[in-house]
Image (cartoon, rainbow, N blue to C red; front, side, top):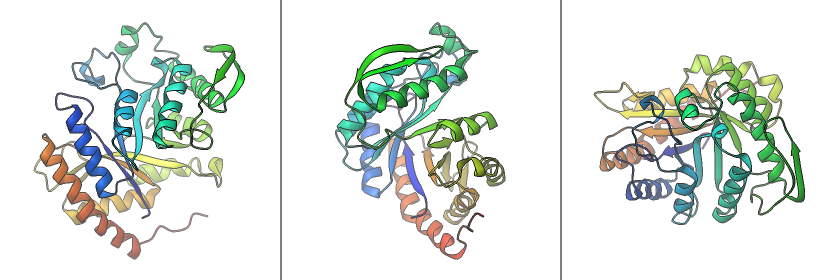
Length: 302
């Protein structure tokens, strides 16, 4: 299939819970989805950044799900890296990758809630600088070794022994979150992929054209988080909405623009409806999408 698809689990909000996530993950694996994803949130007091909601810590949650799945890749979208200590993050993700057999994926972001940074005593204004430095720290540690040192501006250490390293060669794939041009450039410089919010096909195509020469031939994932509403009366939250054929056509337009991965967000309020929507997407939308791709393939980029 030309497009890899993941499912966002209900790991935040009042509906979030162990059985909800396990049922969604097991169904995603049975249906053949590539991955499952969880959100992040540490201490945001404002509702816009997750305040007032139940938030299951993402790395602990994925460790639990790793034990009850066998094939699914396990992702976080997106880990707020400047709010965390990078050596600990590197160890946690490496351990999860080793224990899961190399199934981890990680999108990271600088965060957008000034109140959340203030609540944790963190500087909001230098978060982008710290994010970039943390990426260097994590990658350096994932190389493994007896005496690893890093003399950074914000993070510095000497003589660290790091093992186990991730099972995946080069470490867990690191995608950079954010829809801005700065986030895209950061992803092209430092990441293995880019995970913006939903973009129109036109906006996505323009964005990717700006980094094509910079990327050259190296593999690069372009992953969008997309809300799905099949035949829904209220599709205000959805990026893919309408009939089976309409949703397949919308997905195809984004694929033509350069998307090669998507994290699908099913917004049905209760679990049975979410599971039905997942089955419909796999059983109806994907065959329609593949049929359109055969008739209208992606042109070669020159």
